[in-house]
Amino acid sequence: MRPFKFRAWDKDKKEMVYSHPSYIFDKYHDGGAVMQFTGLLDKNVTRIYEEDVVKFDNKIWWVQWVLSQWTYQRGDDAVIWIDEHARDTEVIGNIWENPELLEGKNGD
Image 1 (cartoon, rainbow, N blue to C red):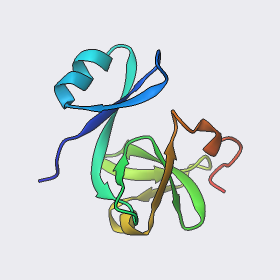
Image 2: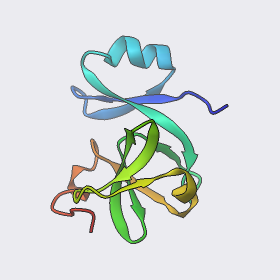
Image 3: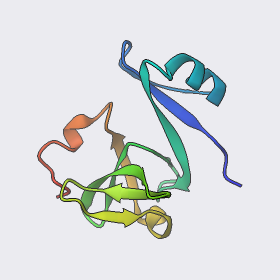
């Protein structure tokens, strides 16, 4: 069973907060973005979280939960299920701290 880990974007402090799930939900359920750990690690053994920005197959993607699966999404509506590709992926940021990674990219 994978560990249930969460993080949250503190919109006031403009920083990512990693803590116990009960703290995250108590503090950020109304005023922040809560993201779940996918249970997967990238090629650098970095945890992959929801709303991370990743590089896979020389393209930029972001991580989302879609149809009961963790997926990579792109601006052109492309979707890839993560499970078989996690070890070929590199986390390069997230949509909160690094929005510029997605600007005008459309997955390219």
